[in-house]
Image (tube, rainbow, N blue to C red):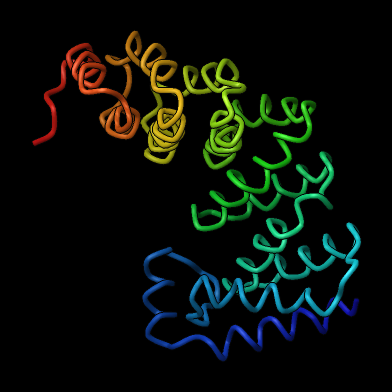
Length: 243
């Protein structure tokens, strides 16, 4: 694969898809310092898929070289394509690719890249490699709140399968008193998704911590609980139900 040519092709194709109005609006919304072409997520995904369709049998090293080259570009669409390519080829990834994922998260500075890198890419590696816990344990105490957020989001898929709730509970409990919005939101988000299949487990964890949890966390966490469970948690938190 000619990586440099592939990057040029992806950028050229996504530039054609974009509009100046969308580019300006997206750049403002994401508070981004990158160049934006204004392509939609679906357009970026289509272009990214097309770029690798011409290279069947892509190897791990080819994938990581292309991802690295795209990520190094100060262009939103290129960085989005880099994240998507990691999602397209989960079986090519190895556990030590979490180092690359971590580096990308540190450089993201926005949920627009972090949430897919953590929830999908890192999350897929977490379900496949038990030794990934060493990375997540370190992420959960990192000074960078995007890294801490990622330690939570990376467990969503495992939690849906009824696994690793104790691990998530340790991380979330250590962050429950934080004031950072993106941490509070992440705890609630993961609890909400877990509650779709395992509401009792979520209820048992949240209830004794209801008074400590923020309103942002609780609003998400109780969404799929029973009315009685929601009422008990809100009473324990000393908050009134939203009208």
